[in-house]
Image (cartoon, rainbow, N blue to C red):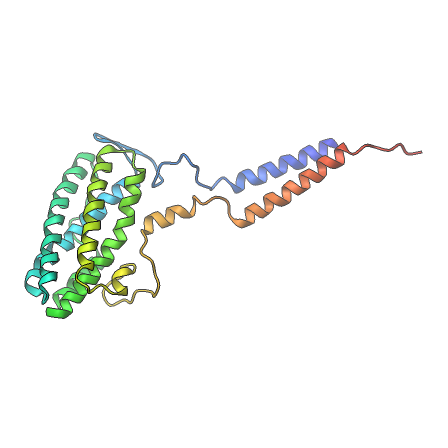
Length: 251
């Protein structure tokens, strides 16, 4: 292979791999992906805004169900836990509404479809049946938002969001502990939350869907790309050795 042909070959490989890596996430991309927005309280990302929305949604159904636990529950422990959750979410709701208003982040005014299905399920029950639904639906919901809060706390560049995430982290951990103290939490309460009437997959581990989807593009090149890189490296090495091999005179 001549030097010119070898150079053209290496250039082709570089073009191939530059396109292969074009879609991979960079280490300096902002957490949460997407553009960083400027607000009166500093920059925020999509992940920051998502936390505000999730906390608001949690309050929209956990406050009323905590209040209703006082009359629907059979267990005094569930009644006490419900009262504490309602009080804490009232505290969080006041702050998330104020913070979102200062940052220009739109918040929902009603619970989402899954949350409404959980409320409907609980309101159709009283006594021990209510206790079971309350402990497991709320434990699953708190387990789902907990890793999302930790992600924002660790990655946000906004001081106001960081302080809010810190408070949320402490309260959600407290709530999970309280719900577990009822001794009514089963596999359903430790799995990813699903709409009432749907069955959670066995062996599932609670995870934040937003964070999981973002992590897919941040784990580096896929195995096929790695294999192609190895093959390209071998070819380049052989080409270099061939160019450097002493030429023998032909007689």
